[in-house]
Length: 327
Ligand code: GDP
Image 1 (cartoon, protein in one colour):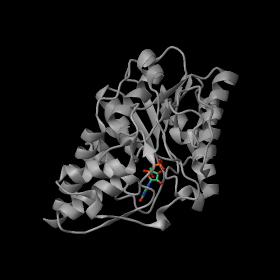
Image 2: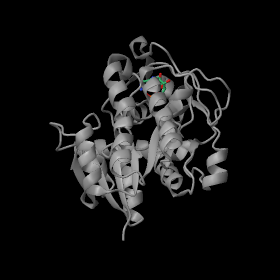
Image 3: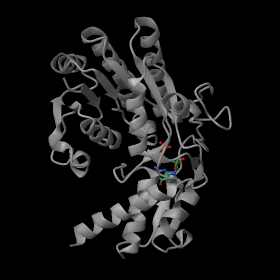
Image 4: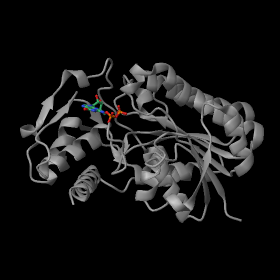
């Protein structure tokens, strides 16, 4: 019988790539869909990857425990991936309570449903490199102490430790993937890589001239979401649950990422980028750099796409999108 997977956050970037991966592996995939007035566009990412008609969508919400319990009773999943969150760091200062509820407590609602209905299901929690925040070691691994710097990171830290606690308290097969930034053509437009690649596309097509950015000195370890969802799946195939850093081991400034993106279409980023103080954050995470050695050794996982490949794919996809709109 086909394995059954239940995914929260299925309409997001990682949800779409994970759905594709699991469908290709022969899983029956169920996704939790939060009702919204924009339901006509909500399946866009799944449609883009050609998997919208291969997934079963269930009407439920992370903040409504009863709806989650009913989803678990309906699906009886073998594997559960909790990818849902208020995932944008900057918004978390504007909506700290919602972020705490969705990103922090939402994970516990999923864990509770699993514990009540189907404690044998395996659980994946989308933990985040943002938990390292004000970094305590120059290269971060699973043993590096956390120092979160935003309401988002603090909520993620709570969910992270609750996942560890459910593993230790109830013997649940629960694993945290501490994923460093991961991007793709399906990345939300508010994140810096996508803001840049979309602007490069518009500028190269003559639709725009400039791009306003915040702190271009910040540095991130950026990988491809398509590679990172493979690590999620691998964690749930292990005999023992555990926590893993998923990263590339290379860090690059926003400035350098811009240079790569503009250079892909033969432009000089300094001719187009303006710094806007309103885009700075109340507290910044200056640099993140992950050490994925444990994931490599235990899961046999390695990233495939380089940052240059990733940015080129994103720029090309944004150019195609804008051309499609112009046609
Ligand atoms: P995050 O690492 O999850 O916060 O991912 P983001 O892509 O939102 O931000 C990555 C880094 O880029 C942060 O240090 C931001 O301060 C920096 N950054 C600089 N300009 C911008 C901008 O215009 N938008 C965003 N989202 N980030 C920016």
